[in-house]
Image (cartoon, rainbow, N blue to C red):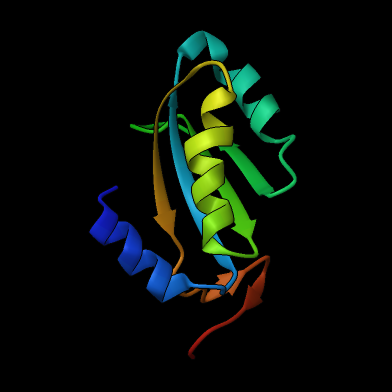
Length: 104
């Protein structure tokens, strides 16, 4: 992530809580290990093994953007078997945990 893009995200998210979906591509033989290890992080709310271009989806929640950044750059790469990750920031949740939210 370039410094300009990172700065823009920091200004937008600042000190606000942030929710993100992280798509992981993993070594096939390591899928169960990656799912098990990532589920141990307290910030990880959900772990899904899926079909398609992505192998595992994580839903994570952090009090501040900087903590998400640290997780993606430093903590997540320590899990053996992850080949690639893509982080998607949640802008608005219209329904979460079975509850409708956001704008009608």
